[in-house]
Image 1 (cartoon, rainbow, N blue to C red):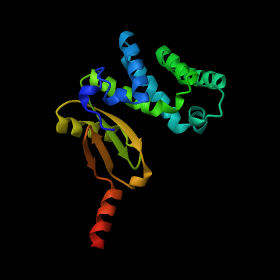
Image 2 (cartoon, rainbow, N blue to C red):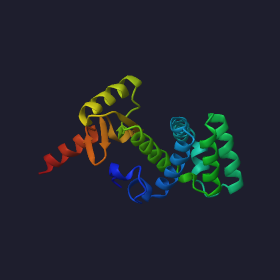
Image 3 (cartoon, helix red, strand yellow):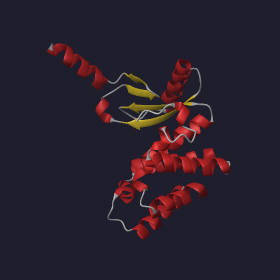
Image 4 (cartoon, one colour):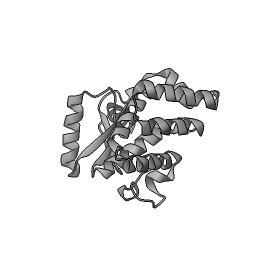
Length: 193
């Protein structure tokens, strides 16, 4: 779903808020804004996102319907403590577990980051690369994107080995696809006919 920047922070019912993950993200963002800890919650969500990427057990906990509600709550709170997340995020994770909504965490994290970026006056870019980017590469990418869009850009990084190489960058409805996979597909179509 494409999201216009006008819907990210408002209560229009469209954009980020339209999805279940977007509604949860908006509720968390409003709690964080009221508690003046938007950045702390964002950092905690980044830690949770990393744990989801790195831990098969944590991913299973968040997605398996076989995990009992009480066990899920206990396990997710223990994981939150181990990750050192802030109190707001810890409570939020408990609510998600209690409501059996842990599977929506990736969407919630993405939507929250968009809301936080908009709050700071930044644009948000979803960047998919074939391999993890170094801090130096991320800094260079942010600088190039800042020049392109005329304001600071926060990046949401994802790794997809199927790209083979290059990047796919999406800012709002704009997409820049310099992936090797796309180049090979284009070449294959050109050779067919």
